[in-house]
Length: 396
Image 1: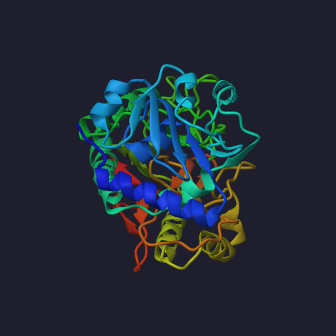
Image 2: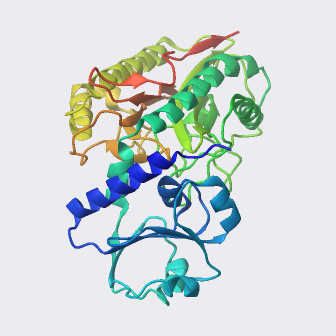
């Protein structure tokens, strides 16, 4: 069984406490209910709550499964509970101001908890945790590098062999998922966005890649229908001359990489589409070059966007009226982490941050062209861990 190293967990807790002191010198306590919040600090994700007091030891209280938590985690303080009533008995005082993961805490859970831990003010711990998680440790980079190589292997080497005339988008999604599992994919991808259901990502043939979804990204997908937007259509079958658009994530030991690869099946694309695709590839290269310590995500975004011709900006980063206002995003335990390569993110980029860079453009009558790879920030610029293929792989 893979376990997050004890030294890794200890370092994360030290960094959290140190950053909380800088963020709020008067902070007293933080509660983590989310599975990812627990996993980052303890190496296990259970039904329970992680309580981190300013003065005193952090404790992971587990309802289910305590036995599993103890078996798979090197975290020092794991205690069993049957309800939150058991937990409150361990604390002589309950601070009135608490930090919580506001993005992930259901109201019903908080109401049950606050019966025993009455709190007058809730503050968001998200900015602190995002800042800590943005800079990856050597251990985290190792997990992501392994993940990225598997990702590259499946999309650049295996996927072209799956593409056959008559296969549906949904069937391709299933076959691709099977190959990813064989390659070591953890089987699930996680997003911080509220209520997002994704199997792998967008799998689209032709103009299906332009169809709008509620997902906050530049690509599109017909999906199975109103209830499931992301698996791929059963009716849309691959035919000669199609552009195939795969925007999918892969995970390893909780850490994920994001990659988009395009293919041309049994024909040729219009010269306009090829030219627009190459411009997206050039944008990715320029962004990667700027992923250096000291630059800011906002600076990268504005520099790139201000340099683009007006005619190219139309349908860039989304088709029609649904253009997104970013060029990439941090990635790790969630696919969509912060900071984002967009306006408003002015804190300097640091070495060992990881970004998925995804310049894409919708082309009428063709679909979505473009590229996406996951990069590690270095002093020399971003280094891709998901390969270097520029896409539009020709499949006869």
